[in-house]
Length: 414
Image (cartoon, rainbow, N blue to C red):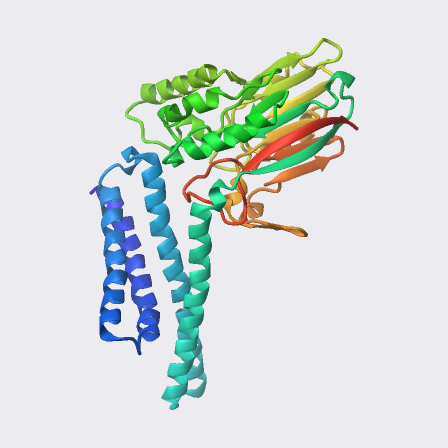
């Protein structure tokens, strides 16, 4: 193991062991009256998971885990994270109780003598922590088994000023963020694409992140994705993950070749990949300019490949301009300020953080802390932005409260 990796690795393992030791106290209290065989089995299971976690992290650190099969890697690390998170919740409850004890001891300058009440309180805190932990554990597992594949169709009437009459009532379907490398089977995406095709849309937009890192992650889905058809065309753009920026390549040439292969794959699918360019749809004077740019994000850490000025040039006289831009932060950063005649922007990228709450009257996700526009329709004067919640997933192979999305737009004249 490299010296640069050793210290962070040891710190991380130390944190895991500390959380395990702390949360184990709750397990012991819960099983204090249980038969001996159940105690031994539960203790073996608890520390067996702990040892397995440390072993997997050690192997992943010493080897290049990026070369592991993408879907298996995603699910494996997700399970380890969920178990760690559950134990962390328990530890937080116990830590809160211990902190209260210390504060009380300092205030009274003595340890409370009613030990029985203290043990009772500790058991209550432990049971509460286990209950809350179990709630999150259930939801994360359910999100992997069910919610992550519960494809939802959102139907939006898109009212656009100056929309040519010939486009009134036309249907556009948007999908985004497939992240094919996170799937262990093609069947979920096949089911989603069937929903897309059953809509019989006039145009279909794909707004980036076909893969996690490598173009070959999408190869098993080639037949399925090639089946997407629309009479006015299927149009696509690249997302931040499509460039391979988060993968350790052998050379710059290998990274470039991967991107070239990915671009060729879009063509093989029958999709028109828009690379800082636009295309005119319809007759001049009554047409739509569809503008597509490469990834451009306003947040720090995202390389700005997009060039909207280049893509926009030549579309000035189009009646309606629609923009495909993967990252929704682009809308406030450039579009609203400098391109006020772009009627609607279609984005993805956020996934709604794959975690949140969307019920009538409540729409919340941690995504809002990073992105002002993170899911759904937003308006600024006559300009509109739609942020698709994505079809796939990344890191955590599921969704809690934020369902994967297929968006169906019906164009209407404002």
